[in-house]
Image (cartoon, rainbow, N blue to C red; front, top):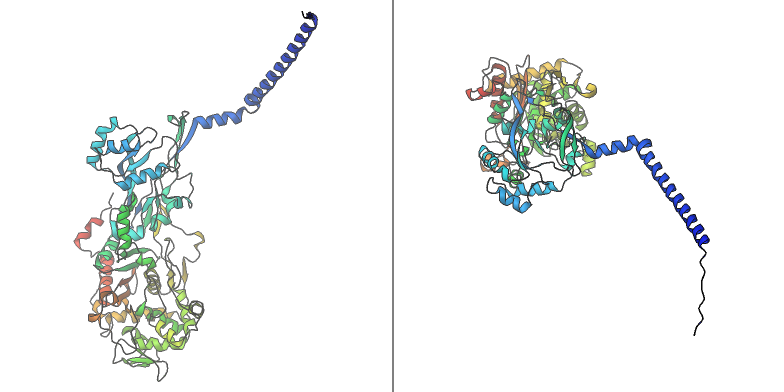
Length: 625
């Protein structure tokens, strides 16, 4: 039988221990409460403004509203780039059906292409604020609008929104000059203020639309809205309306532009007309063109591929980037260079055979007139476009004086002030050939450049600029598109290089060269004599640019050549010659005879100076809005 030990409890000690524990716990609780109260005091009193701001940021959202884009007008108030309301089908993904169900529901009301669905899915992945709509189909037809409107009650998240979109009333003739807008891409956002373009759909891509993007875009509006926890807009608290973009007024004459485009007929080519008194571009044509409206809301992949693969290159801006041999249109400027540097004179005569040789037994550089021209002087060399005169002149000069003088006229550089993408062409030099071909400059190279062939390449805008400088007797303006921004004259930062005087040792040489160019038209042997019979004086110069090089004794036979190998046909001219108002350069690619651009130029002179347009161009007389 075991022993039992009785344990006696010390109630007083237990009570004391319990009491001490309660006190410690109470102190701990009070300390935690103190810390909590301190934290609450810190958050609600000390950091009140900070957290109030954060709370408001979660509750209040700023939404930008893109402004109406500025319009573009021609010199007579004709609208070349307009804003027109359209109805677009948009979807708020947070409220919409699943994608397969949405496709099935909408298929009964409107035809949506696979490309449009693919674009919608792609933009679903881009960043956007909650409950922001995404455009699914732009420019609904009236029939589509009606069908969708009837079914909207059962299409959650689908709505029809009225939007302003760019519209180009006159299409392809103006596409390269005015340009177009297109959907904003990630690359576009790298060159603009992202915050300003939040919510914007379009941005200038080419032409005037691109260069003056910041002016045309304006300033976005801002709406302060209250949102719920899911980001859905509940109410608008405050609103600042957008400021529309500024309107642009061009030097361009819309009728002249369209007329020049049409006069090119089925030929590829370019026409540039400039006011020699201010450098304003009156017309800048590149043919073929394209419909800029197809780019506004997003061109289809198949349509874009068709344009890119077109052998006529409708997307290529020939006026700014087309590289052509200036051919005989360079001769008036070569003649002035010879006078300036003492290699020729107005009285010196030269016997022009049907060919020129650097060495007695060397290559024969042929004249276009195989029998030669006999004894001629500088003036007669312009009138009859004598190749051999310029062969020998260029040989005597060498490339350095040629390069120095022609660069003063804008060759070898991008001259237009307010369009991007212009090519500098090629004004060759000793240094250029050494760098490019690792070879020295040969006398034969100079001979070819003397008639605007060989290595020399110029763009239509460059040749037109030099032509306008000749018309202005050496007062050279670099061409520009925009004359006014809103109601203020357009200016260029620093005004550096916008205009300058090309000083000659004898300034009378400008006038004498103009007189020689007048005789190109009035003289019985002038290469532009077909333009005789006007009530005003025309100064001009014809040109025929070789597409390929002939061998020394090879004959040019257009009848047995593929059309693409035919010579380019060129003409420069200005009128009235004694007080020029318009200077024109025209080129017909593979046009053969310079008669084509000469006739075109005369038609433009008659139209611009005396309003002799065909009746079908009367629709340009009244502003389109």
